[in-house]
Each structure stands twice: as structure tokens, then as C-alpha cells.
Length: 204
Image (cartoon, rainbow, N blue to C red; front, side, top):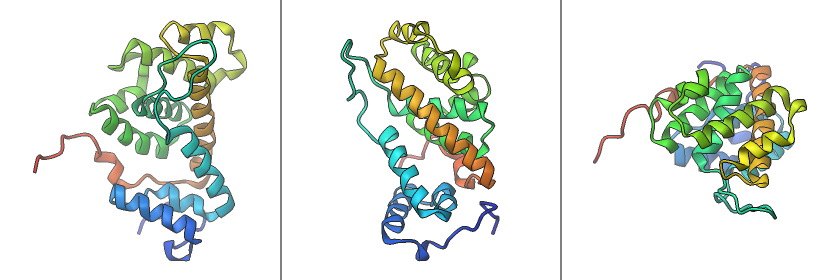
């Protein structure tokens, strides 16, 4: 079996019940256990904190947060994954580019989009709104100290609210942590991710 982390990886049977239940739920839905769930389980308290923030950012209804000055359109699931892929590529995180690229292909139903976004999102087949979203995310990723009011204004011009900007920035920042932990641990992407969403599923 190929090593998925340079740190010890606990056996599923040895994990606390709350962690084991969550991982089994993911396995039932996906058909396999993404390696991140086992690799980070090396530190249970940090695993729980990581998953709680992950869920707060990614597992919620689209467009439910509204700022006081505008309704905003919210971020779709595909938008969120697109942010992760683009910024993870900037951080050279193989695990997150491959894993979230697979999820992006599935959500957007576009077999080419993840590769395009990872290599050069400015040439990807995405909407002007998504381009503006990624421009903002990449500035948070690579030059957050240089953010100005004009960056927020550029988002508003495409219908994003200030809470949407927070979401974009928070997802970028959280996966900056995730990228670095994946690189630190030498986390290996599951083989299953590489082909997900690349060819249409056969109709029964």
C-alpha cells in the first residue's frame, strides 16, 4: 500500500467514535475515504477543528449570508471549489488541486474546467463573474496585505456582497492552511480523484 502521509496514519477502527462515524459517512457517499480524513486524524483535536471550519465554509446553503448594504448572489458549490483549485495551485498543493479539482468538475459538469483553472484561470472557460471572484481570491492568496477598497468594489460590480467577499477570502485563507498541512505531511491524493468528472457517467 502506498504511503499517504509521512506521519503515522491511524487505523479507522482505532479512531474515536465521532471521527469514525464522519469518515464512514463520507465513504458511503463517495465510495472511498479521501486521504485527508485519515492523514489529519493523526491529531484528533486539530482534525475536529479543521473539519468544523471546513463545514462552516463549504457545507451551507448558497446565498444565505447577506450583508447590510446589498443582497449579494452568494457562492455556488462550484464557485467555492473553483476558489480552492485556483489558490491551491498557487500554493503548489498537489492534494488539494487534484481532490478539489475532481469535485469542481462534478459540480460544474465541465470535464476541462479544473485543469484550466489550476494552470491559468484567466484563460479558463469561466464567466466574467467567476473571473472577478478568482482575481480577488488570488490577491488574498498571494498579496493580502495589498487589498484595497477597489478590490471589494470590483466584486460588487459583479453582484457580490461584502459577505460574499468574506466567504471568498475565508475559503482562500482556510485552504492556505490546508495546502501547507498537506505539503508538510506529504499527503497523497487518492487515485480515485484523478478520473472523477472527466467522462459522463453511463446511463443505467
